[in-house]
Length: 336
Image (tube, rainbow, N blue to C red; front, side, top):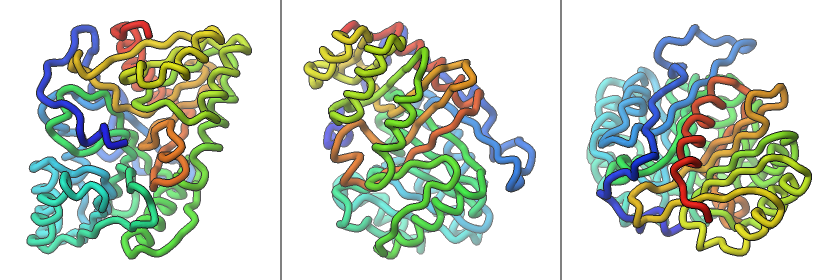
C-alpha cells in the first residue's frame, strides 16, 4: 500500500509498454442521454503523458455538483478545476485520505481556502484508497489510479465511466455518509464492489466464472483467497495470464500460478513503467465475458480494511480498452 506514495517518478516509459487513449468514447462527452433502462459505460487507459485531459474534462462537466473521493490528490490542474467548478456555482465536495496527509495537504489547503468542501477521511478505514468522481449526481468515474501528476507518465491505470442510475445512486449515498464519517453498508447497485464489504466475494465471482481465459493485471498480489482462486482456474485448464508490478515481492504466489499452468510477467521500478492498475478480464470476447476495474489491490488489507470501490461489467467496449492495454503490457513484461 505505502509503495503507492513512495514510488519513483520521472523515468522514461519502457519501450513496448504502449500508451492507450480513450478507445471507448467517454459517456459524459457524446453518448446518448441514459435512462434507467439504458445505462452506458466507457473506459480509457491513462494517457502516459504529463496530464490526464479525459479526467479534467469530466471534472469540468460538473454544473450542479461534484463529489470526489481520492487517495492521493497532487495535480495542480485537477485542483484548480475543482476550485473553478465551485466558483461557477457547482457544489464541490472532496474526501482525501487522512493517512496520506503528506501527499494531500497542499491540495487540501488550496481547496479549503477556495471554499470547496473538503474533509479528511474517516479513521474507520486503514486507508480510504477509493478513487472516484461523480458529477451532477448522474455519472461516476471509477478509477484505478490517483490524481498524482508526477506518476502520470509512467503508470498503467484505467478509468471507467458509469451512468447506471443504481450504481450512481449507491456511490452518492456512500459518499454522503463517508463525508460525514457516518457508518454505512454500501449497496452494490447493478455493477459495483466495495471494500471492506463485498469486494473479495465479487472478485472471486469474476475469477471463478472464467471458462477459457483469465487476464489479471495488479500492483499487489497477496490475498490468499483470490490467489487460490486464480490458481484453481489455471489447474482447470483456463489460460491464465498475470501482469504484476515487482513480481519478486510475491514469489510464492507467482510460483503457485506458474506451477498450475499460468504465466506471469512483470515490471519493476527500475524499468520506468509501473503497473499500478487493478483489473481483471475473464473470457474476453465470449458470451461469459466479465471485466473488473477499481481501486482495490489483491491484498487482505485492501479487501477487508480499506474503503475501496470497483466495477464489474460485461460491456464489450470497456473490456476491449483494458484487454488491449493488458496485451501490450503482457508482451512487454519480463517473465517472472
